[in-house]
Structure formats: structure tokens, C-alpha cells
Image (cartoon, rainbow, N blue to C red; front, side, top):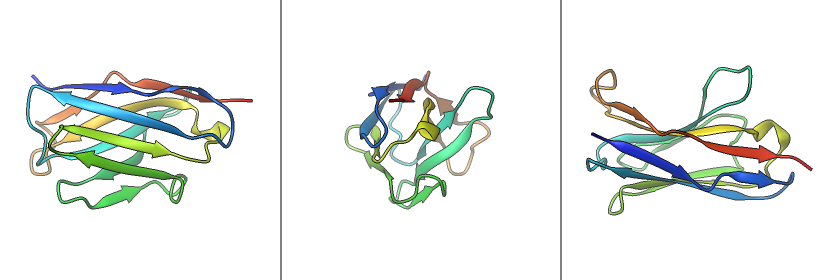
Length: 119
């Protein structure tokens, strides 16, 4: 059973930085696409960033140039460095692991970590 555990959320001011981490256990996820999604109150869950096993990255337009996703396959972790945060970044952030060939079967989510940007 794969488990994803997020950490690093919190309350910050506009313009601040925050680093989220996600640790996976139960299975080596080096071959999986890892990603971060977020859900703000009243909104649907949306893609923030993904990174493939080869290191290719994809970002939502709203975070390009501010957020950086990275992974450490040896540690089975994925991180999201968030800079220049603003109020629109306030949401619950979820870690995701998805098998590139069988995403309908092997698709895992963490419990989420709250990020609040407020002055």
C-alpha cells in the first residue's frame, strides 16, 4: 500500500517562500510521475506541477517562474519550492503519484497540507 505524506504547509505573508515536501512509502516510485495539485475553497482540484521519472516538468501558468518541483528518487520524495506567494496560492496542496502507463490503476494521493497566504 502506497502512502504519501505531505509536510511544510503553513501561514505566510504575501511575497514569502515556502517549501512543501512529500515522502512516499510502501513502494519505490522512481518510475512514477509525481505531482502537486491544490484545491481552494469552492474550487476544483487543479494541477500545480508535475515531474516525470526522467525529470521533465510541467507547471500551471499561474505558478510558472515562481514554483519549482523537484524529486529525489533515492529518497522517494518530491518537493515543491514556492516563491513570491500571493493570496491566490492559498489552498490545500496535495501530493500525487501516478503510474505513467496505468494511471487508472496506480494513482495515489496524500492527505494534503494547508497553505495560507495572508497579511
